[in-house]
Amino acid sequence: MTKIIKQLQIDDTVICEIADALKFGKLVIFPTDTVYGIGTNAYNSDACERIYEVKGRPKHKPLIVLISDISMLDAIVDYIGPIEQKLMNAFWPRSLTILFKKKEGALPDIVTAGDSYLGIRLIKEGLMYEIIQTAGIPIVAPSANLSGSLTGTKIENIVNELGCKVDYILDCGDIESDIVSTIVKVEDEKANIIREGKIAKEELAKIVPLKEK
Image (tube, rainbow, N blue to C red; front, side):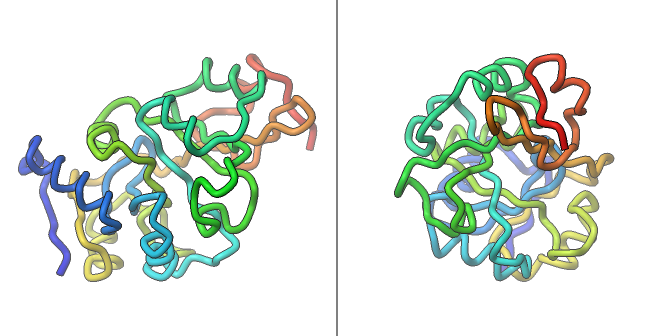
């Protein structure tokens, strides 16, 4: 049975409860720095599999990973190049997802859909930061919606679609914007924009060279 927790009910005790639930592979819907996400423990293969099932998400689509501290990269990323470092310095903890070479065996293959690159975003404020920091683990968090439907911004729609399929929903009201994070991958010492979102192409171009499409 899904436990729905309203924003006014969320305190340190609830944050600890949610952090423990995530560590044990429960599925939690929560507001992120972009839209509502559906999250679980990135190290738990069965829990990540369940996210695909709940969303009806195609297995070839990887999951984005959220971290609360740069130090979390050490356990899951093989290499941080100079261009990735420039992007991190300029845009983290804003809504930029960077694809890094995954450390072999660090996370289940299902997280990256079998790819050798892992999409990561740093969260440094808000409820999601507190939860990840308390849990002490990276969290996978695709948008909280059925695959192919509207992005998870309206809490009523989220409850209707996913309310009986997850373990917790943190109801913090509607999110006004449905703009997702920008995703980039460094190729040949240039940033290739995989998906443009909150961080515009023009902003990226001021910091690093961009790969021509």
